[in-house]
Image 1: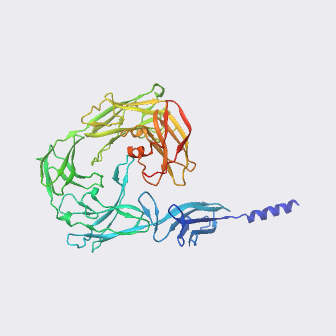
Image 2 (image 1 turned 180 degrees about the horizontal axis):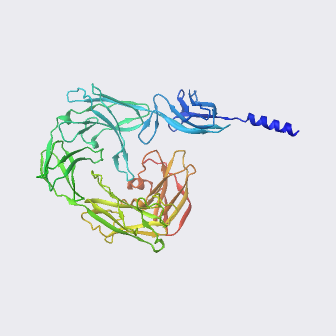
Image 3 (image 1 turned 120 degrees about the horizontal axis):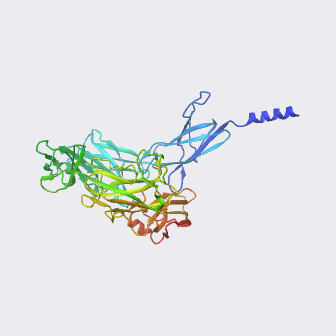
Length: 545
């Protein structure tokens, strides 16, 4: 009897499935997920299995968008999905031809691959035309996107894609997702400054016309560059106080992808000249290094209908911004964060400070603070004149955001004047006695978003009164599937709290207009020092932004 039982168990073990299955459904993006038939699906094992087998299998989806791979050995598989005329949104603006993901197959298990969603892609084609309507060959064509920052300010997105015209002046770009695109060409003419011409023929990015794409659309956008090439040009000349490198940068109300020209001042006379510059608004910068010190100067340039002559720039050394950390009596172990410090010190945390310049600075000077051995005083050395803010945040010894702390930044002062909200001007304001005030008793806020749809959502915590120059009082977080959120280290005060759809775009949570639009429906809370707010029921506002 015992021998028969052993034989039976052995037989059952031999029948246990040693393979698994991968299946999924490929759908089209949108409010309703429509299946895509005929999509190509390929799975590969990234390395051979123990028996030397390298698996590469492919199939196509059926009429319901479904695919199935069975009898697969256990292991990790890469899944790739593609379909002609469709793409995958890899980031906010970038689409790729193939959706890629990975799944792990376990013996006897059926693995469902989630979120296999493709978007019908679009095409923009056209010609770059001269004043006689002839195609301009072999010039670059760039495709830009407009976005808004967290303050609701329009600006060009950082990324762009480009192509070149052929010998007939024709261009084409496929694999574009839905949205507004701005198309421009860059002409390298006799000017020291390259000329950007935006569709349909604008010299200024703020006057560019958008090419609006919907899913699967094809649009034509011809760029006429004749007026730009044949228009008047002028010189910008002058003298800098000593030998220096100069940059003339086009200024635009919408902060376009920069175009600039460089020149070097004459070593003996300091004279400089930029030739054939088109009318517009510019910033002229000069920089040099003397005895290890960086010297800078800048001046705005407005070109209308004549040459700009006798521009004078006097180079000056930057100003040292000096300050100290002042902490609550209950947080005496807090120190300023230094790179490479790690977790070697036993402290209650670190305060990382960052100096942000409020305008474009073309020389890329690193503004890293020098922290003394006590960890309580800092210096930003040789900071050029201009408008700045200091950002401050609590981090762990590795630089990650500090979770669960009751510390918060209460104020930042320059010579006893608060600059927490307003920022300060180097070259005008006194900056040799900055103080960063940190207190204890920060608040933890927990809650759940009510009425959330299937769309991803982001929860917004903003002060009841606009604090435009003080980003530390604003918080956002993408909600997990359970709709629960938590914010640590919130400063005492009055706030509004709400959630909105997250559509893979920047939420302008510091824009006064955006906040005013949600004011009446938001949850208003007042938090006292040292308290914890839990169980909050936060409204989900499915409103246009």
